[in-house]
Length: 383
Image: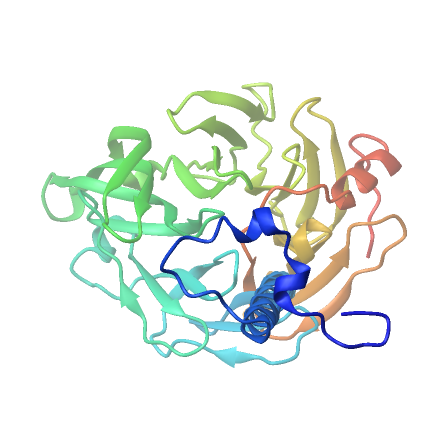
Protein backbone atom coordinates (compact mmCIF):
# COMPACT_ATOMS: atom_id res chain seq x y z
CA UNK A 1 0.00 0.00 0.00
CA UNK A 2 1.42 3.39 -0.97
CA UNK A 3 1.11 6.73 0.76
CA UNK A 4 -2.14 7.51 -1.02
CA UNK A 5 -3.71 4.33 0.28
CA UNK A 6 -3.64 2.41 -3.03
CA UNK A 7 -2.55 -1.21 -3.02
CA UNK A 8 0.67 -1.88 -4.93
CA UNK A 9 0.77 -4.71 -7.40
CA UNK A 10 2.04 -7.99 -6.11
CA UNK A 11 4.70 -8.31 -8.83
CA UNK A 12 6.15 -4.90 -8.04
CA UNK A 13 6.15 -5.65 -4.31
CA UNK A 14 8.04 -8.95 -4.54
CA UNK A 15 11.74 -8.97 -5.51
CA UNK A 16 12.60 -11.02 -8.58
CA UNK A 17 14.76 -13.45 -6.62
CA UNK A 18 11.99 -14.17 -4.21
CA UNK A 19 9.48 -14.56 -7.03
CA UNK A 20 11.72 -17.08 -8.76
CA UNK A 21 11.45 -19.36 -5.75
CA UNK A 22 7.84 -20.17 -6.63
CA UNK A 23 7.68 -23.78 -7.81
CA UNK A 24 7.07 -24.30 -11.52
CA UNK A 25 3.57 -25.35 -12.33
CA UNK A 26 2.11 -23.90 -9.16
CA UNK A 27 -0.27 -21.00 -9.88
CA UNK A 28 0.88 -17.71 -8.42
CA UNK A 29 -1.57 -16.36 -5.86
CA UNK A 30 -3.13 -12.99 -6.45
CA UNK A 31 -2.60 -10.14 -4.05
CA UNK A 32 -6.15 -10.17 -2.71
CA UNK A 33 -5.93 -13.93 -2.07
CA UNK A 34 -2.79 -13.37 -0.02
CA UNK A 35 -4.41 -10.53 1.89
CA UNK A 36 -7.51 -12.60 2.65
CA UNK A 37 -5.38 -15.51 3.82
CA UNK A 38 -3.27 -13.23 5.97
CA UNK A 39 -6.33 -11.66 7.52
CA UNK A 40 -7.85 -15.09 8.12
CA UNK A 41 -4.65 -16.28 9.78
CA UNK A 42 -4.53 -13.16 11.92
CA UNK A 43 -8.19 -13.62 12.87
CA UNK A 44 -7.55 -17.25 13.83
CA UNK A 45 -4.60 -16.20 15.99
CA UNK A 46 -6.73 -13.56 17.71
CA UNK A 47 -9.56 -16.04 18.30
CA UNK A 48 -7.16 -18.68 19.64
CA UNK A 49 -5.59 -16.14 21.97
CA UNK A 50 -9.00 -14.98 23.16
CA UNK A 51 -10.09 -18.56 23.71
CA UNK A 52 -6.92 -19.27 25.70
CA UNK A 53 -7.48 -16.18 27.85
CA UNK A 54 -11.12 -17.12 28.35
CA UNK A 55 -10.11 -20.66 29.30
CA UNK A 56 -7.60 -19.37 31.84
CA UNK A 57 -10.16 -16.92 33.20
CA UNK A 58 -12.74 -19.68 33.36
CA UNK A 59 -10.29 -21.93 35.22
CA UNK A 60 -9.53 -19.10 37.63
CA UNK A 61 -13.24 -18.47 38.19
CA UNK A 62 -13.83 -22.19 38.74
CA UNK A 63 -11.03 -22.32 41.29
CA UNK A 64 -12.42 -19.24 43.04
CA UNK A 65 -15.87 -20.83 43.11
CA UNK A 66 -14.46 -24.06 44.55
CA UNK A 67 -12.60 -22.08 47.23
CA UNK A 68 -15.95 -20.58 48.26
CA UNK A 69 -17.72 -23.94 48.56
CA UNK A 70 -18.28 -26.11 51.61
CA UNK A 71 -19.85 -29.56 52.05
CA UNK A 72 -21.38 -30.61 55.35
CA UNK A 73 -23.66 -33.06 57.13
CA UNK A 74 -27.21 -32.30 58.26
CA UNK A 75 -29.35 -34.97 59.91
CA UNK A 76 -27.43 -37.81 58.31
CA UNK A 77 -27.36 -36.45 54.75
CA UNK A 78 -24.76 -34.61 52.69
CA UNK A 79 -25.32 -30.96 51.80
CA UNK A 80 -23.37 -28.31 49.91
CA UNK A 81 -23.35 -24.51 50.15
CA UNK A 82 -21.27 -21.38 49.73
CA UNK A 83 -19.03 -20.47 52.64
CA UNK A 84 -21.18 -17.42 53.33
CA UNK A 85 -24.09 -19.79 54.05
CA UNK A 86 -26.03 -19.12 50.85
CA UNK A 87 -27.11 -21.67 48.27
CA UNK A 88 -27.64 -24.56 50.65
CA UNK A 89 -28.57 -27.69 48.74
CA UNK A 90 -29.04 -31.30 49.81
CA UNK A 91 -27.18 -33.89 47.74
CA UNK A 92 -28.31 -37.17 49.32
CA UNK A 93 -31.45 -38.69 50.79
CA UNK A 94 -29.87 -41.79 52.28
CA UNK A 95 -29.40 -41.02 55.96
CA UNK A 96 -26.67 -42.27 58.28
CA UNK A 97 -23.93 -40.65 56.16
CA UNK A 98 -20.93 -38.54 57.10
CA UNK A 99 -17.32 -37.58 56.40
CA UNK A 100 -17.84 -35.53 53.21
CA UNK A 101 -14.84 -34.54 51.09
CA UNK A 102 -14.76 -32.07 48.18
CA UNK A 103 -12.63 -32.41 45.06
CA UNK A 104 -10.36 -29.45 44.27
CA UNK A 105 -12.84 -28.16 41.68
CA UNK A 106 -15.80 -28.83 44.01
CA UNK A 107 -17.52 -30.83 41.29
CA UNK A 108 -17.51 -34.11 43.22
CA UNK A 109 -18.27 -35.05 46.81
CA UNK A 110 -17.08 -38.26 48.44
CA UNK A 111 -18.59 -39.50 51.69
CA UNK A 112 -19.40 -42.68 53.59
CA UNK A 113 -22.69 -44.24 54.68
CA UNK A 114 -23.34 -46.91 57.28
CA UNK A 115 -26.35 -48.50 55.65
CA UNK A 116 -25.13 -52.05 55.00
CA UNK A 117 -26.30 -53.97 58.02
CA UNK A 118 -24.43 -57.14 57.11
CA UNK A 119 -21.05 -55.52 57.79
CA UNK A 120 -21.52 -52.31 59.75
CA UNK A 121 -22.83 -53.75 63.07
CA UNK A 122 -19.74 -55.93 63.46
CA UNK A 123 -17.07 -53.54 62.24
CA UNK A 124 -18.53 -50.07 62.81
CA UNK A 125 -17.52 -49.25 59.23
CA UNK A 126 -19.59 -48.31 56.19
CA UNK A 127 -18.95 -47.80 52.48
CA UNK A 128 -17.68 -44.84 50.45
CA UNK A 129 -19.90 -43.15 47.88
CA UNK A 130 -19.26 -40.53 45.20
CA UNK A 131 -21.70 -37.98 43.81
CA UNK A 132 -21.54 -35.17 41.27
CA UNK A 133 -22.23 -31.92 43.11
CA UNK A 134 -24.16 -30.31 40.25
CA UNK A 135 -26.67 -33.06 39.62
CA UNK A 136 -25.97 -36.70 40.29
CA UNK A 137 -26.91 -39.86 42.11
CA UNK A 138 -24.74 -41.43 44.83
CA UNK A 139 -22.50 -44.14 43.41
CA UNK A 140 -20.96 -46.70 45.72
CA UNK A 141 -17.22 -47.09 45.18
CA UNK A 142 -15.56 -50.50 45.09
CA UNK A 143 -11.85 -50.77 45.75
CA UNK A 144 -9.64 -53.81 45.20
CA UNK A 145 -9.28 -55.88 48.37
CA UNK A 146 -11.35 -53.52 50.55
CA UNK A 147 -14.51 -54.74 52.31
CA UNK A 148 -15.47 -51.50 54.07
CA UNK A 149 -14.14 -47.95 53.96
CA UNK A 150 -14.65 -44.55 55.56
CA UNK A 151 -13.08 -41.07 55.87
CA UNK A 152 -12.38 -40.32 52.18
CA UNK A 153 -10.17 -37.47 51.00
CA UNK A 154 -9.48 -36.33 47.43
CA UNK A 155 -6.04 -36.04 45.88
CA UNK A 156 -5.29 -32.55 44.53
CA UNK A 157 -5.75 -33.74 40.94
CA UNK A 158 -9.09 -35.38 41.76
CA UNK A 159 -8.05 -38.76 40.36
CA UNK A 160 -7.65 -40.64 43.64
CA UNK A 161 -9.11 -41.00 47.10
CA UNK A 162 -7.29 -41.68 50.34
CA UNK A 163 -9.37 -43.46 52.98
CA UNK A 164 -9.34 -45.84 55.94
CA UNK A 165 -10.13 -49.35 54.77
CA UNK A 166 -10.93 -52.72 56.29
CA UNK A 167 -10.04 -56.11 54.84
CA UNK A 168 -9.62 -59.65 56.11
CA UNK A 169 -12.45 -59.28 58.63
CA UNK A 170 -12.93 -62.25 60.93
CA UNK A 171 -14.91 -63.06 64.08
CA UNK A 172 -13.56 -64.97 67.05
CA UNK A 173 -15.58 -66.29 70.00
CA UNK A 174 -19.28 -67.01 70.37
CA UNK A 175 -22.33 -64.81 70.91
CA UNK A 176 -21.68 -62.12 73.53
CA UNK A 177 -18.00 -62.99 73.64
CA UNK A 178 -17.44 -62.49 69.91
CA UNK A 179 -14.54 -60.24 68.98
CA UNK A 180 -14.04 -58.78 65.53
CA UNK A 181 -10.58 -58.51 63.96
CA UNK A 182 -9.57 -56.95 60.65
CA UNK A 183 -6.65 -55.60 58.72
CA UNK A 184 -6.92 -51.83 58.88
CA UNK A 185 -5.21 -49.63 56.32
CA UNK A 186 -4.71 -46.11 55.09
CA UNK A 187 -5.14 -46.71 51.38
CA UNK A 188 -5.18 -44.78 48.12
CA UNK A 189 -7.54 -45.85 45.35
CA UNK A 190 -7.61 -44.84 41.70
CA UNK A 191 -11.14 -43.60 41.03
CA UNK A 192 -11.09 -44.82 37.43
CA UNK A 193 -9.79 -48.34 37.94
CA UNK A 194 -10.44 -49.06 41.62
CA UNK A 195 -6.86 -50.27 42.06
CA UNK A 196 -5.60 -49.76 45.61
CA UNK A 197 -2.28 -48.89 47.21
CA UNK A 198 -1.92 -49.52 50.95
CA UNK A 199 0.22 -46.76 52.46
CA UNK A 200 -0.17 -48.01 56.03
CA UNK A 201 -1.39 -51.44 57.10
CA UNK A 202 -2.15 -52.95 60.50
CA UNK A 203 -3.15 -56.66 60.40
CA UNK A 204 -5.18 -58.26 63.18
CA UNK A 205 -6.65 -55.05 64.58
CA UNK A 206 -9.20 -55.81 67.29
CA UNK A 207 -11.86 -53.31 66.32
CA UNK A 208 -13.45 -53.13 69.77
CA UNK A 209 -10.16 -51.72 71.09
CA UNK A 210 -9.89 -48.86 68.60
CA UNK A 211 -9.50 -48.13 64.93
CA UNK A 212 -5.77 -47.23 64.78
CA UNK A 213 -6.18 -44.90 61.76
CA UNK A 214 -8.68 -42.14 61.06
CA UNK A 215 -9.25 -39.01 58.93
CA UNK A 216 -6.43 -39.34 56.37
CA UNK A 217 -5.81 -36.44 53.98
CA UNK A 218 -3.47 -35.67 51.09
CA UNK A 219 -0.94 -32.88 51.30
CA UNK A 220 -1.60 -30.12 48.71
CA UNK A 221 1.14 -31.50 46.44
CA UNK A 222 -0.24 -35.05 46.71
CA UNK A 223 3.07 -36.49 47.89
CA UNK A 224 2.28 -36.95 51.58
CA UNK A 225 -0.54 -38.30 53.71
CA UNK A 226 -1.66 -36.89 57.06
CA UNK A 227 -3.56 -39.24 59.32
CA UNK A 228 -5.04 -39.27 62.79
CA UNK A 229 -3.86 -41.79 65.32
CA UNK A 230 -7.02 -43.15 66.92
CA UNK A 231 -7.49 -45.09 70.12
CA UNK A 232 -10.34 -46.54 72.11
CA UNK A 233 -10.63 -43.33 74.14
CA UNK A 234 -10.19 -39.61 73.50
CA UNK A 235 -6.48 -39.72 72.79
CA UNK A 236 -4.01 -39.83 69.96
CA UNK A 237 -2.29 -37.22 67.86
CA UNK A 238 -1.55 -37.13 64.15
CA UNK A 239 1.28 -38.10 61.83
CA UNK A 240 2.60 -37.23 58.39
CA UNK A 241 3.85 -40.02 56.12
CA UNK A 242 5.15 -40.35 52.60
CA UNK A 243 3.41 -42.61 50.10
CA UNK A 244 5.66 -45.52 51.13
CA UNK A 245 4.43 -45.32 54.72
CA UNK A 246 7.51 -43.71 56.24
CA UNK A 247 6.56 -41.39 59.11
CA UNK A 248 8.10 -37.94 58.66
CA UNK A 249 6.43 -35.98 61.45
CA UNK A 250 4.35 -36.79 64.50
CA UNK A 251 2.46 -34.56 66.92
CA UNK A 252 2.56 -34.41 69.88
CA UNK A 253 6.24 -35.40 69.63
CA UNK A 254 6.34 -37.01 73.09
CA UNK A 255 5.02 -40.56 73.01
CA UNK A 256 3.62 -40.26 76.53
CA UNK A 257 1.55 -37.19 75.60
CA UNK A 258 -1.97 -38.51 74.99
CA UNK A 259 -3.54 -35.10 74.27
CA UNK A 260 -5.84 -35.59 71.27
CA UNK A 261 -5.05 -33.62 68.13
CA UNK A 262 -7.45 -34.76 65.46
CA UNK A 263 -8.57 -34.24 61.87
CA UNK A 264 -5.22 -32.96 60.49
CA UNK A 265 -4.97 -31.10 57.19
CA UNK A 266 -2.02 -29.37 55.60
CA UNK A 267 -2.15 -25.77 54.35
CA UNK A 268 -1.04 -24.81 50.81
CA UNK A 269 2.31 -23.67 52.25
CA UNK A 270 3.11 -27.33 52.95
CA UNK A 271 4.18 -26.43 56.45
CA UNK A 272 1.17 -25.54 58.60
CA UNK A 273 -1.11 -28.28 59.94
CA UNK A 274 -4.66 -27.51 61.00
CA UNK A 275 -6.16 -29.74 63.71
CA UNK A 276 -8.36 -29.69 66.80
CA UNK A 277 -8.51 -31.13 70.31
CA UNK A 278 -11.96 -32.40 71.32
CA UNK A 279 -13.44 -31.54 74.69
CA UNK A 280 -12.85 -34.31 77.22
CA UNK A 281 -15.18 -33.12 79.96
CA UNK A 282 -18.32 -31.05 80.37
CA UNK A 283 -16.34 -28.07 81.61
CA UNK A 284 -13.98 -27.96 78.62
CA UNK A 285 -14.23 -26.75 75.02
CA UNK A 286 -13.20 -28.12 71.66
CA UNK A 287 -10.14 -26.15 70.57
CA UNK A 288 -8.66 -25.54 67.12
CA UNK A 289 -4.90 -25.28 66.60
CA UNK A 290 -2.28 -24.63 63.95
CA UNK A 291 0.97 -26.59 64.15
CA UNK A 292 4.21 -25.78 62.35
CA UNK A 293 5.47 -29.19 61.23
CA UNK A 294 9.06 -27.98 60.93
CA UNK A 295 9.35 -26.58 64.46
CA UNK A 296 6.50 -28.34 66.28
CA UNK A 297 5.21 -24.95 67.38
CA UNK A 298 1.50 -24.91 68.24
CA UNK A 299 -0.86 -21.96 68.53
CA UNK A 300 -4.47 -21.86 69.62
CA UNK A 301 -6.79 -20.41 66.98
CA UNK A 302 -10.33 -20.52 68.39
CA UNK A 303 -12.87 -22.77 70.08
CA UNK A 304 -14.50 -25.29 67.79
CA UNK A 305 -14.13 -28.71 66.18
CA UNK A 306 -13.64 -30.41 62.81
CA UNK A 307 -11.96 -27.44 61.07
CA UNK A 308 -11.49 -27.38 57.30
CA UNK A 309 -9.58 -24.98 55.08
CA UNK A 310 -11.59 -22.83 52.66
CA UNK A 311 -10.73 -19.83 50.47
CA UNK A 312 -7.52 -21.49 49.30
CA UNK A 313 -6.27 -21.92 52.85
CA UNK A 314 -6.77 -18.34 54.04
CA UNK A 315 -9.82 -19.17 56.16
CA UNK A 316 -11.35 -22.11 58.02
CA UNK A 317 -14.89 -23.39 58.47
CA UNK A 318 -15.60 -25.35 61.64
CA UNK A 319 -18.39 -26.55 63.90
CA UNK A 320 -19.40 -25.28 67.31
CA UNK A 321 -21.80 -27.15 69.54
CA UNK A 322 -24.77 -25.82 71.49
CA UNK A 323 -25.87 -27.70 74.62
CA UNK A 324 -23.04 -30.12 73.85
CA UNK A 325 -23.60 -32.34 76.86
CA UNK A 326 -27.40 -32.54 76.74
CA UNK A 327 -30.07 -34.30 74.69
CA UNK A 328 -30.68 -31.02 72.87
CA UNK A 329 -27.14 -30.89 71.51
CA UNK A 330 -26.75 -29.32 68.07
CA UNK A 331 -23.95 -27.81 66.05
CA UNK A 332 -23.59 -24.84 63.70
CA UNK A 333 -20.91 -23.95 61.19
CA UNK A 334 -18.70 -20.90 61.58
CA UNK A 335 -16.05 -19.24 59.41
CA UNK A 336 -12.86 -17.52 60.53
CA UNK A 337 -10.35 -15.65 58.38
CA UNK A 338 -6.81 -16.66 59.30
CA UNK A 339 -5.46 -13.21 60.00
CA UNK A 340 -4.75 -11.32 63.22
CA UNK A 341 -7.82 -9.79 64.84
CA UNK A 342 -10.35 -11.76 62.78
CA UNK A 343 -13.59 -12.73 64.53
CA UNK A 344 -15.53 -15.97 63.82
CA UNK A 345 -18.91 -15.60 62.10
CA UNK A 346 -21.73 -18.17 62.09
CA UNK A 347 -22.74 -19.14 58.55
CA UNK A 348 -24.89 -22.29 58.64
CA UNK A 349 -27.22 -23.61 61.33
CA UNK A 350 -27.84 -27.27 62.17
CA UNK A 351 -24.75 -28.59 60.40
CA UNK A 352 -21.56 -30.50 61.18
CA UNK A 353 -18.46 -32.08 59.60
CA UNK A 354 -17.56 -29.28 57.17
CA UNK A 355 -15.28 -29.97 54.21
CA UNK A 356 -13.56 -27.47 51.93
CA UNK A 357 -12.23 -28.19 48.45
CA UNK A 358 -9.00 -30.19 48.27
CA UNK A 359 -6.09 -27.76 48.40
CA UNK A 360 -3.30 -27.31 45.89
CA UNK A 361 0.19 -25.93 46.53
CA UNK A 362 0.34 -22.17 46.82
CA UNK A 363 1.87 -19.22 48.61
CA UNK A 364 -1.06 -18.46 50.89
CA UNK A 365 0.17 -16.68 54.00
CA UNK A 366 -2.97 -16.96 56.11
CA UNK A 367 -1.82 -19.67 58.57
CA UNK A 368 1.70 -18.25 58.66
CA UNK A 369 0.34 -14.84 59.65
CA UNK A 370 -1.51 -16.40 62.56
CA UNK A 371 1.50 -18.46 63.64
CA UNK A 372 3.84 -15.49 63.46
CA UNK A 373 1.47 -13.17 65.33
CA UNK A 374 0.77 -15.39 68.33
CA UNK A 375 2.88 -17.01 70.98
CA UNK A 376 3.42 -20.75 70.93
CA UNK A 377 0.83 -22.79 72.84
CA UNK A 378 -1.24 -19.64 73.34
CA UNK A 379 -4.34 -20.36 75.44
CA UNK A 380 -6.42 -17.31 74.53
CA UNK A 381 -9.56 -17.61 72.46
CA UNK A 382 -11.01 -15.85 69.43
CA UNK A 383 -14.63 -16.20 70.42
